[in-house]
Length: 428
Image (tube, rainbow, N blue to C red):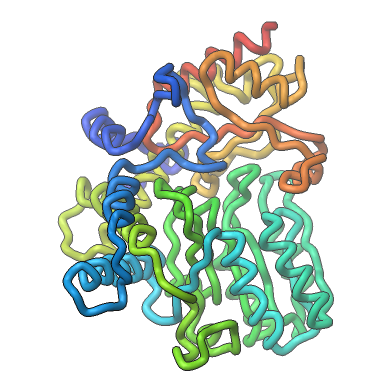
């Protein structure tokens, strides 16, 4: 695909035909629990679900069989676990290392952070003010436990993301680990992981780098071969899948660090206990879906190539939706120019933003605004500095904002509906 200046600026929408097929694959795409119509623009909290992800989960959870046995049902269940692992590796382009799991992405973040901080050489750990508490608190908890200093990089107030140079300024030859989010779950600003990895390892070649990709993974491509971080976690329930699993990749050198495991299972074992085939099957459905989108644009039998194309197309679609939200159909009728609405960041480069937007309505607090949107059938969320999950918003000179997070399966008509409702609420 030729990347023209127009596409670089505004993204590229799916065709109506393809978008219709995509929407058919999602549960409750515009329907609430009671059958009423609603728009779910809170995908940063927990995304719309693929029908296939929960259907295969329900099917496999019916079986009582333990998957590590020799009878037919067990062998079949084990095949879903094996395929789920393979597909997760394809998703991240992980050709080595190990897979770690837990009940949640937060739990798996603590699980992968402890052995890195405990066994890495160095006296300090670098993280940022924008981290999800599961990442920042894992750093703080284990740094304190193992006697290491924590250094916290500020946000880039212009972009709403990680200040790359400010973070690198905190890294030295004694930095044991860096934990940095792949994209802000508040603002959608993507982190320049490539620069951070390259420059940090010039300062200390042995530094371990962890990235929380829970927010970014549904919106953009991850490639641990191209950007060799040491650990990445995702949450399938925020990635078109189901609840009940946090899954992570750890690099080859992390794989062999001492960690909690069944001792006779070998160092490569980061998955404890009986695995849940339904959860691994859900991961496979996510990857198959992304590859299916890729197959609408390129002819390939290589699943990783299809995943790359699919994720790139998802990002272009979401970039186009974000552009419309910000600027409207005519370039002047979106949120940026709307009376009574404040947008916080520089949106000159939408290629490096996920489809997450924070706004403030001048005539009411963010909690009231969320309620007003809800009355009109639009689900958004208030992020307030007084809540420990949202205290990062104070970095941007506000005590809170309304977080708006649609998904690639949404339409331009739904973006216009949101703009129309916003105009109504600001006129109250």
